[in-house]
Image (cartoon, rainbow, N blue to C red; front, side, top):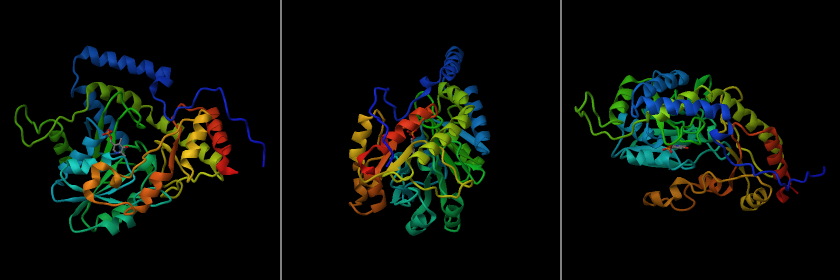
Length: 382
Ligand SMILES: *Cc1c(COP(=O)(O)O)cnc(C)c1O
């Protein structure tokens, strides 16, 4: 056994995530667009939103993008635009942020929560095939943590069954799946632009991409009271528009998204390499190298000694968190589904064992070394 570096340190704590203030050049550009929007006086819709939609559609390789107020609304309005609602069921992985299921419920449908693959933590075609019943009309495929679902395998199951596929791409903006962007492969790709996401604004925001002009049109109507033209309300919609300010900020950050994702990929690979052979288990990819992607929205490890490791990391100035401590089927919000403990054992085990380590695009190589050294110094390795 080689000597273990002394990792107890007076260095500042490495946060789990860090936002725009870490990049002064970006900050300056963002403040300029805030001024531009403030002095234009247009705060909802208008040229900034239209320009962002055009740029984001092109970036994703989709025919249409529609800016919305959140990722949750994106799922709700995508389902409503597809005609899915009361009486329908939608398959959702239980090990996701609750919004993946809430979008289904808020559209009036019922989520059918399923387990992911224990190695990849992702929804699989087999898992979906086993959950298809007479009322199931759609699937929410979550590219969890930035790791991509095998969409081709999934579509082989959903297409013959006539199911729609929503890609929950809230954690995987810009990821590639066999050369196509995540979100552009299913019927609708749903995005969140919440500040911590790979593409995030300075508040809430979201959007959809789709190649179906009818779906794009219906989402546009739904986000603003079904109104077209002015005061002609064609359907009961809502207020779910993307703010001009967020759109303007997102346009600046979209130009940096590929570089930020490259930094995430590089840091993720360095952490994986450093942590190989330690007491933590690293999630596997669903697709072979070069076919799938991982844009490391968050860096997840798995350990049976999570609480002890968290304490140890805290003592060593390494930020950590749990995303997410409860599977959706075990939340109070979904108690009405009546899914008791043990009903989805993989999601339940993951919720007990997953741990999020720091990863953000401006993280340094020294930070990576400190994180690796701290995990390696944990007694669970010895
Ligand atoms: C963040 C997130 C959402 C919801 O996005 P909001 O903008 O917060 O409504 C949906 N699904 C997943 C997987 C997310 O991480």
